[in-house]
Length: 202
Image (cartoon, rainbow, N blue to C red):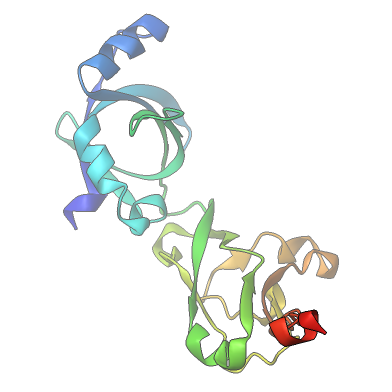
């Protein structure tokens, strides 16, 4: 998909002033690092990045950066935004090495919530993304969690989630005491009894 391919230029004009000039010209300063190579300062088109980041997969998918005719695979590690304007101010990319595991976070997609919320039950999301490690070829865009059969008062933990082959939860790898809650179903709260007008008149 084109959303996962971006043109980038190497920039030599560095520093706060240079970055400010780039932003005024609708460019985004960025840095590319990792895979045992030197970090490279880059410039990307702001509007194209702004459009691309609307797709959830932009944050977890392996991206292709076209840098002076050379295609470099990378993942987005950090995105800085203006505090109140719809502007992206800086990007951090990490090179992808097919032989080296990635350490990143992927979003959780909860499905069949309408079945779990029948009767006024409420779904509580304790986690909306899961930190994982895996080889680049195994990187999922998201992790799907089915809550259709989750009983009222029950909670799904990381250990209950079936991760794709070759994908490991960073927290679970630390031990059983890091088995974080992911999602739970709560019974509807009882509505407070309201005094009727007739009762109040008595």
